[in-house]
Length: 416
Ligand code: CAA
Image (tube, rainbow, N blue to C red):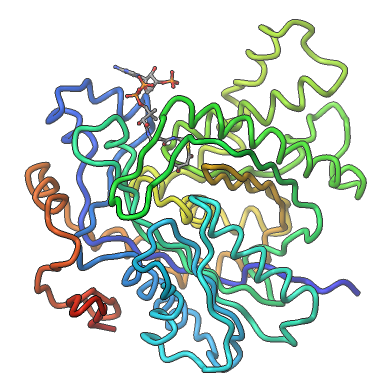
């Protein structure tokens, strides 16, 4: 029998402060509806220099181990997907490994490709297990990022930060992956990038949306072809994409998921050989509100309150989706679309596990978000202007890590 492989459990870590998106709009002299209705945002996570990509990753991973009672002696791989590296050489994975006192006999590395790095790491872990190379051991995959464009930029309302830790194993209580069906699409483009040494990303915003939609069309069609060969979807009265119970997208801002969903539907409508005859009618059918409400809307609850988390955004959508309706989705197939600028997109699918609701209850996401403190725009601006290498002396909350200091280019962490 083919091995079952996938995500057994997850945990989320977010910065302890956030700004209300309407406050930010008003401070920038922008109609708040542009950020709420136009971008789909509600709140935006604000990190301080003590909450760097390492401390968020370590906090999420420690939380996963503690909440789910993970036996760390059974771990054989730790991959950190990130765009927010802290060193050209020493990986975040090595910090996390040390802070969590994980076994020496583990493969550890970082995976970087803008927002796609986490999915690349997840696939490395899944295929390591599926191939038998893991010899029954599990993997930790942690997606961690701080999305930062800078004050008063067009990208400002699409910032955020946090980490999602995933336990990958042969007991896929959350999501059993359809190994081998993934569709991918790569292109050499400059849509979003961050030259070495820069804290803020550079982005060609509207072009980046076009690049995302173009790449995802290729990835989705690749997945659909393989899924059809396996008889998982078919040309029918329902579009192939409608045969997935839910579709989760990379969410740089919530409205993007709506655009992405319309693009997936457009691929089906264009390729079906039936349906609306004119491009205008196809566009209209692609934008179906009913389809968006049924297949996408419920996944966005956490993304709307945290903002962009680059590598972790898709996995925050998975967390949000399962937080909202894990029990109802048990046994059903969902699709997931990852996009990293530069670019690489990957579409894959999996079946939600029977124990997903139980696993998600342990992740306690309501508490994770409820503990945050709302700050004013003035305080957000103060935090943004702090130097990255001089964290404020704040005692870490129990169960979390913080960057304590950087001494002679060595980072020291406190907590947990
Ligand atoms: N009321 C309601 N809606 C309003 C409004 C109002 N008063 N004013 C504007 N809007 C709507 C606009 O119509 C638009 O909606 P549509 O796209 O559906 O037409 C939306 O609000 C945004 O308006 P603009 O396009 O005018 O906004 P902008 O030019 O200021 O910037 C942005 C938007 C390009 C997303 C910018 O925030 C940005 O550059 N963000 C960072 C880049 C990004 O997130 N790219 C996504 C793809 S790349 C990727 O996914 C990788 C990654 O994570 C970065």
